[in-house]
Image 1: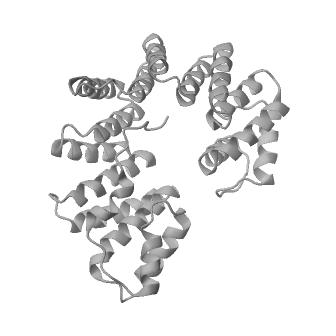
Image 2: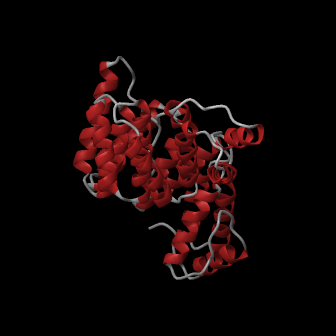
Amino acid sequence: MKLHRLCRPLALAVACLLPLAAAADESQDKLATCTAQTMDADRRIAACEWLLRKKSVPPSNLPNIYFSLAGGYDERGQYDRAIKIYSWLLERLPEQEQGSAMVRARRADSYRRQGNYDRAIADFDWLLQRNPKDQWARNGRATAYTRKGQPDRAIADYETLMQQQRDAGQAVDDALYINRAYAYLKKRDLDRALADFDRAIAIQASPRNYTQRANFHYREGQYAEAATDAEQALALDPLNAGAVDTLAHLMVVRGQPERALLLFERAMLLGGPGTIAQYQAALKGHGYDVGTGKHYGRGTIQALAACLRAGCRLVE
């Protein structure tokens, strides 16, 4: 389950800390790479670390460099390192500054993705005390509540968000229905969960929403419905990794491990590092040694094939 939409444009946050001071040509090139949020995380990290080793970097540039470095660590899943930098920055930025809220928002999301929900909620609370209408923070807190096992609090946050959108004369975002559906699932209130998935699709018949409902049907053993939704998602977007993943799991249920393996490999090609890491973690949980890294190799494929022959599932 992901934190759907309502995302604050954090890629712009670097410019909100401090203006960048002029630097020598090589340092300026490195600074541009370090703070380019569209750049590959590894290249950004390398550029930021090069700058931090230089003694000639203007002190006013340091907050931006550290902030970008932490963002790179976030993208690589190195949340401990990212959180350490965000905390260091928060000790040095006045709370009333916009940059402080941006850094705290990043730390909250890092805690959430790390699974440290209590600390994530504490940071989201701080953001909401500062601005009760911060939809991104409320959505993030609701997701943390769901994952922590407090779905009633999550549902209350989602209903507040829905009412805020209605009060503003806006249509309710379909992503809120998807996220609330997962909170209802946590309560095992399946009728309300399915109703929310249906509402999301009625608002936006997107590949993502069909994939989310397909995943619900799969987990509840409703395999024909899961296949129908996954195929609809692929009709809209043939490169939808989530829908391919659902079909792969359905092949496992149907006792077709060879077809499942082909679909899982396609899901990894489409989904990239996040999907690969998810599969590798699941395989390790079943006792298979697959190695680590952004890319999958022969070890991952061999482990996956053995797992499927043994009848194991990557997602329960």
